[in-house]
Length: 138
Image 1 (cartoon, helix red, strand yellow):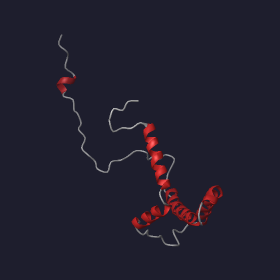
Image 2 (spheres, helix red, strand yellow; image 1 turned 135 degrees about the horizontal axis):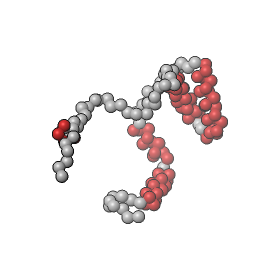
Image 3 (cartoon, helix red, strand yellow; image 1 turned 90 degrees about the vertical axis):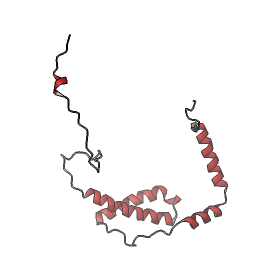
Image 4 (cartoon, helix red, strand yellow; image 1 turned 30 degrees about the vertical axis):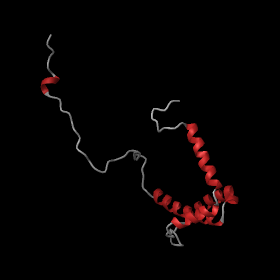
C-alpha cells in the first residue's frame, strides 16, 4: 500500500511502533513512573462524603449494578478501585435519575439533530420572472 503523504505510516509500522513503546514503558522502573505521576498531579477535589441523595429504588438499582461488576471483576480490583467505582456509580445513578425524570410523550420526535446556537442569514435564490417563463427562440 503506497502512502500519498510522506508522513503517513502503514498499519504494520504503527503496530510495530506501538509495541515498542509499550515494551519500553513496561521495562522502565515502576518507582520512576509513580514518582513522576504523583509530582505532576494536582490535588483532586473530593466530593462530599454523602454524595447525591438517592431514592431507595435508585439505591437498589445502583447496588445491583455494582454487585454485577464486583461479581465479574471483584478479584482483580483493589479496595481503592472499588470505592472509586462506588462513587462513580452513585454519580451516574443521580444523572440517570435526572434523565429519566425528563417528561416525554409518544409523539415527541427524536433529539438526534443539532440546532445551531447562532442563527445565520441564509442566501435565498429568487428566480427572476423573465428567465423562468421565457419561451425559447428557435
